[in-house]
Amino acid sequence: MEPSLIIAVFLILLTGLFLKLRKGAKVPISRKKVVIITGCDSGFGYEMSIKLRALGFTIISCVLNEESVRPLEEKGIFAKKCDVRNEEEVFIFDFLYVIRFI
Image (cartoon, rainbow, N blue to C red; front, side, top):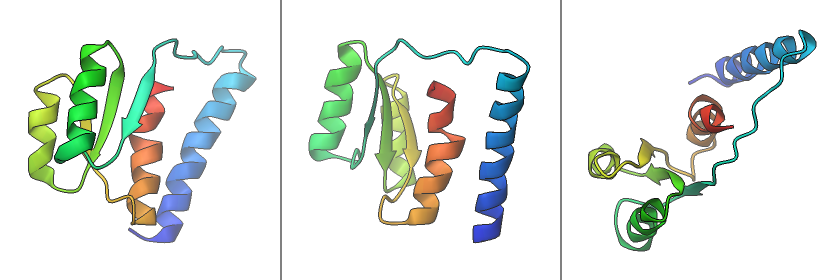
């Protein structure tokens, strides 16, 4: 994805938020506890996602492989492919996925 497209998406989201605030709308603040966990394909990240979900937390899991998304989603965990070493993927993950939990 082009950097200019990433910036455009960010500006569109920011403009939408500004317009809502300008009209006097209150931005809802989530009272839920949301946890973002990386490395959830297996091991510690996977286990932590399942344990925290069982405790009632909303979990957003980052995985490296698309095949790892479905098993987490079947357990009620929001999972998305995101390589945290890739700045572009992190940006997209943050603004197009995490923002819905704010």
